[in-house]
Amino acid sequence: MNMTEKILARASGKDEVSPGEIIEANIDLALTHDGTSPPTINTFRKIADHVWDNEKIIIVFDHNMPANNIGSAEFQRVTREFAKEHGIKNIFTHGEGICHQVLPEKGFIKPGKVVVGADSHTCTYGAFGAFATGMGATDMAAVFATGKTWFMVPEAYRIVVNGNLGHYVTAKDVILNIISKIGSFGATYKSLEFHGETIDSMGVAGRMTICNMAIECGAKNGIMEPNRATMEYLKERNVGSFDVVVSDKDSQYEKEYLFDVSDMEPQVACPHNVDNVKPISKVEGTKIDQAFIGSCTNGRLEDLKLAAEVMEGSKIHEDVRLIVIPASREIYREAMHQGIIDTFIDAGAMVCNPGCGPCLGAHMGVITEGEVCISTTNRNFVGRMGDPHSEVYLSNPAVVASSAISGEIKDPRCKHGPKYS
View (cartoon, one colour):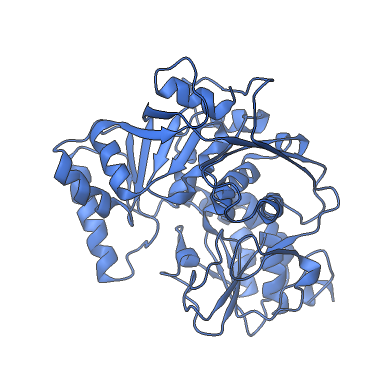
C-alpha cells in the first residue's frame, strides 16, 4: 500500500484498503475557522447535543480577523459561545494567524494521522506525512458529533520532482508547473504523492506550499514522506507519539509524473485559472495595481525573507499598493526581530495583522473593476479578490516583490529599479 492507503487502513481498523473502497475512518483532528464554524454548529445542533471529543476539535479565527463587518462579528460570537458550551479549549480567537500555519506551529499535526478541516486547503498538512483533506460544514458537523467520517479510498498519482531550483525559483513555481501539466481538474479525488530529490531536500515551508495547492488540481490530498527538515521541525515543537508512514516499494499508482526543474524559470498563473501557467518571460511587463505577499500558501518566514531580500533598499512603485501579511503571530514576531518588517515598511508596504487578508476577497485588500493584483495566494478565479472584472496573477514572493517595485510583472532575476541603480 501507499502512504494514504496505510493511514486510511489504520484509521478504519483494517489490515488493508484499496482504491475505490468505501471506509469509515476515525478522525484524529478536526478543524474549523470563523467562516465555517457557524454552519457546522447549526447542523451539529440538529443531530447531537455534545461533541465527540473536545480536545480533538480546533477552531481558528483567521478569515475575517479582526471582524470586518457585522456578519463576521456575529459568526465569531456564535463560535466563541459554542466553544465555551462544549469545553473546546483549542480555540484561537486573538489573531494567532492562519489555521494552516497555526496548527503545525502549535504541534497539533503529526505524521500518520487523519486530519479533516472545513477548509479546502487542509491538505497542507500532508507535508508532515498526514492524511489531510477538506470537507463541507455538514460533513464536519457529523465529525463533531461522532469523530468519524466516510471516505472513498483515492487512487494515487506519483509525482517525482528532480533537479536543483535556480535563484528566485521556489516551491511555488514547482507546484504551479505541476498544476499546469495535470490541469485544474486532472487529479479530481486523487491522492498526490510527492517524491524526488527536489522534494527530499526541501524545507518545511516549501513542502507545505506544495501540499497546500494539491487541491488546485482537484486532488483529495497531497502527501509526502517526512524528511529530515520535517522531523527537526516536529522535534523543535516537542511533537511526539506518532508513527511515520512510508509507501511500500511495490505500491501501485494510477499515473506517474516526472518533472525536472533544473532549468525552470519562475512561473506565473494567469487569470482566471490556476492551471493557466506561463513562464515569467511570457508575462513580464503586465501592469499591476496591487501586490500581496502572504496567505496559507506563502506567508511563512522564508517567504517574507525572500521578498525582503528583493526589496531591500527599494521603494514600491507609486501606482502600486503592496500588502504584506505574515501567516502567524510567531512569524510576524520573528520577522520583526530580523528586520524584515522594517524593510517592507521602508519600501512603502502596508503590513497587516496575521490572517487570510485579501486572499478570499473579503478583507484588507479587495480590488475593484479593472484592477490587477499579483499575489502569492493559491487561487485566481473570477472575482476571487474582489470585483469579477478584476484580474489576479499568482507567483512566488520574489516575483511579487520585484513586481511591486517595478509597477509591472517583473522577473526578480533581472536588474531593475533603484535597488540596482
